[in-house]
Length: 146
Image (cartoon, rainbow, N blue to C red):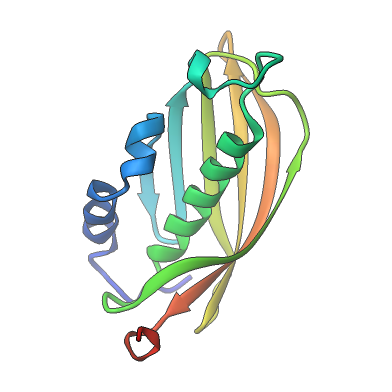
């Protein structure tokens, strides 16, 4: 994997300042590496659906965030990244005290990065894989912004 921004970590941290929805749900990235990110969320009642499991929309959001920021670590400073497509498979109910999401770039490209992410529920110190996602992150070049 090759980054086109040696200061990628600083850039991601700057973007996180403006990630108001992430702050609202309480999700934080704590690993930012070339082509890879990881974050955690303390699971609270507000995050759950009617049966007490982590809401599917929340799980998809975490998968999208970690895959997207993994892609951000690779692009040039003047470029942006948006989700072009995401597919998520829910494998187990999200129950526990915390959710962990790990995202990485599987195949780097000039205009698109193909990413994967996994969301894990932590209960009593044991991690259970609850969702797996595949995403295409599209690189937006300055000349593409109108």
